[in-house]
Amino acid sequence: MTTRHRILQTGPLMPGLEARLAATYELHRLDTQPDPEAWLAEHGEGIVGMATSAVHGCSAAQIKALPSLQVVSSFGVGLDRIDLDAAGRRGIAVGYTPDVLNDCVADLAMALMLDVGRGVSAADRFVRRGEWVERKFPLGRKVSGARLGIVGLGRIGRTIAQRATGFDMPTRYHSRNPVAGVPWGYEPMLHELARWADFLVVITAGGAGTHHLIDAQVLEALGPDGFLINVSRGSVIDEQALVKALQEGRIAGAGLDVFDREPHVPGELMQLDNVVLLPHIASGTQETRTAMADLTFDNLAAFFREGRVLASAR
Ligand code: NAP
Ligand code: 8YV
Image: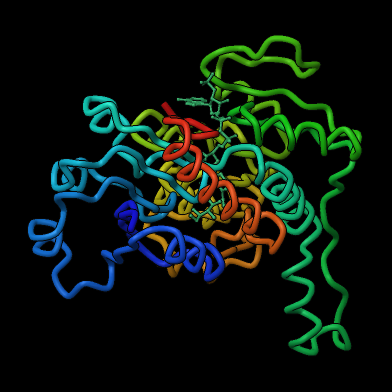
């Protein structure tokens, strides 16, 4: 009888992915253990793979508690909760799910621009409250032709820029390095991009390098006619500065898919009609989540078959 690879699952995954993992490997679930740390200390030896997600990540402490770990496969593209340095020091392979979610995250960024610009969610609330019979809904902001500033022209940022061409939106971007071979102008100074833009869409990586990149000064530069869209990570925005800017009318509105302390959303944001709040759903379609699940499985399978993951994060 062949022994099956021992895999640790750190949190809930899509049911189909969990079933495939359980059918293929000796699967152990960490998050349902009454004392996960004690479980790791007792059973960590011999676990060779980890199936995790962008939300649950993989910490240095977990890597330390798993002396036989060879591969981590994460459902998601964000790496801010995976300790890549700790994995690198041990030569552990890290797989993730880039590209397969570009379309849906870009679609949702467009949806947020249209919603917050035209007041779609606010108008829906207005109709449901019965206010249409009493007065007219306030005029919105034209999105077609508006200036789009993208913070982070990576895989998803480029997909958003392509979508925006269909809306005739002049587009510029900021990142640490200019991207070769793209038609959109590079702006090395973030606050200059914010000053220029009507819609500032944030789609950088999360983590320490981008912590509070969008601060009070950037919001000030965006100005009272500018809208902020965040589909990256909550940590990239100084949320308190954002709340203040919105309350004082120093920016026009915001569309947010991600927050600093998910799933907790600041109560002040809930009070504001010019803010669209979403529960981190940018990749959340059947098609994209299935593709992410398949790649999470295939990364592990490829590692055990040929010693390397299909999509490597390091
Ligand atoms: P990517 O291809 O690696 O692009 C990341 C971009 O961020 C690059 O253009 C990078 O350019 C830029 N960047 C990194 N650090 C920066 C900094 N300090 N200042 C300015 N720009 C910086 O990643 P992706 O696949 O497009 O995904 C981007 C992020 O979106 C993910 O990391 C994840 O957190 C988030 N995401 C969210 C959802 C959701 O459900 N809301 C779904 C998928 C992804 P430089 O290196 O040149 O600076
Ligand atoms: C995930 C995400 O759906 O890929 C990412 O980085 O944020 C989302 O696509 C979510 O994190 C679940 O892991």
